[in-house]
Length: 113
Length: 119
Image (cartoon, chains in turn blue, yellow):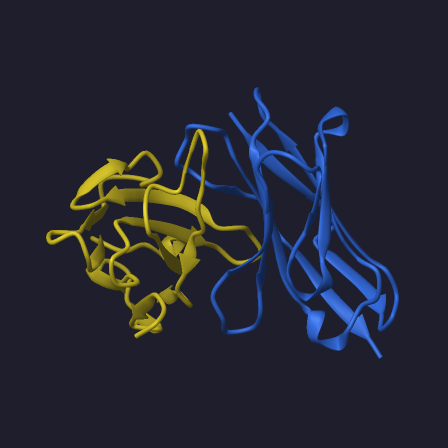
């Protein structure tokens, strides 16, 4: 069964610093991969997704993620953190042909002024 | 409305009571999903509707949980004989078509959720 592991339930960075949120997946075949963001009292919002093609994917708000098949990873990065990036981030995976999105446990990102 | 609407936003009930949670998807979206998010966890899949039928209900934890979508639009998640362990945020999401498959990479739109507290 496919699963997603997000390393670090809480990550804290300074404003302007690099953001790195880690995601590893287990799947028998290359899956589709997603990052969602959840701001307080709001619904989940899609940040970016990898399906096929270029392994470096750019999303909204300056975030990007790179699919590394050899490492079964899909880490999320942003070069310079902004206070407005404070939120909960979820990595998710779906096997091709399936209809169930499987989420990781989430990483809460805190930005320090 | 423009987005997925869920009501109530908050529900407090007593152990053993019956609860209904409603989801109003984006107009025209044929696929509808229910997820449950417990504190400190990621969303867990409950059930997926394509049109009026439940295409996959493998995530429903037990027979106390049931969901319907009689006209292929609004869906209701029903929980009988609630238990304290049912306390969670219940998320609904919709998409224009079945979201994923070979060559399909649609987007799932989530509502803000219904927070259920069972005392």
